[in-house]
Image 1 (cartoon, rainbow, N blue to C red):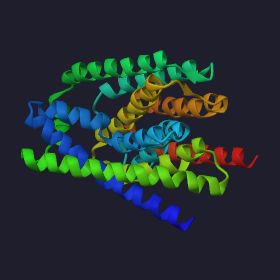
Image 2: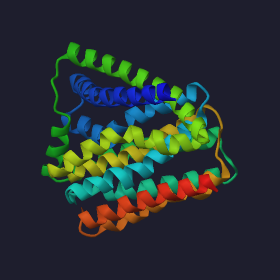
Image 3: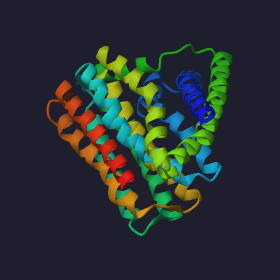
Image 4: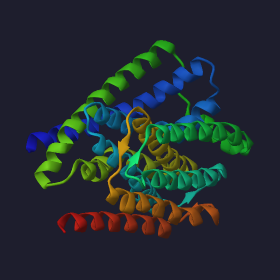
Amino acid sequence: MAEAWGFFALGLVLLALGGDSIVKGASGLAQKFGASPFVAGLLLVAFGTSLPELFVNARAYVVGAQDLALGNAVGSNIVNVGLTLGLAAIAAPLLVRTRLLSHLLVMLTVSTLLLIVFGLDGVISRVEGGVLLAAFVAVLAFLLVRARHENAEVQAGIAAFSATRNVLWMNVLRFLVASALLYFGAKFVVQSAPMIGAAWGWSPLLVGLLPVAIGTALPEVAAAIAAARRGQGDMVVGHVIGSSLFNLLVVVGGMAALRPLPLPESFVKLELPAAIAFVLVLYPMLRGDLRISKTEGAILFVAFLGWIALELVLILN
């Protein structure tokens, strides 16, 4: 058991190191091959923090642990809003100037509802997985077009996020090393997490939903708190919403497109509605004064703790 915990912790460390490096490497390569700093920054803000989860879920899928991957994908969305955004707002109120984010929040709500509808028959088919992937392409197109209408200050902030050294060999090396770190990090997490779960009597779905989703989010929580204290509310909220969309549309959609993805009835009735509930709580916060206060952050965090408590009570019963 101690060995499993050791590999799990090592995997999380490697994922954290690789996730940070691959974002900068990808940004440098994108700009080297013609992408503007604004476009590179926009994509990194929206989807860059999803890469560790993507590697974990890809590894889980390859070794046949679909339930773990599914739990991690949806659990990460709840963790994104309740833990990451909640603690960041508690650290410092989040001022959101990018009005595009409220549109993406609506898309996240619709995407989660769509996943519930697809899962009512107990499985997401390959066609439905294709629909989710197509929806991501539509979201990406909307993001690239609509973001150009943001004010100059917001665009400059997004472009600055992608700032990195533009030396080709350095970014290629950074990208390759980061990919290796993510590969081995995902391998260690996926091989050790089910052992930990089995010792506790937990299903692979629940292991992905709680320890894996929370563990892989911890580096992002620390980064979000630091960004909040620097006054970068747009970056924090953008990471949370973009990563959540990526998890639902690309990770879940991609798994289903390759092979029909079974959804447990309890998952459709509890975890997916919980993910929507967190989004719906967030929506009025952003639609009002475009500011998530410390009190609102505390509400999100307490709701997150309540969700964990509910899951644990259900396990015991």
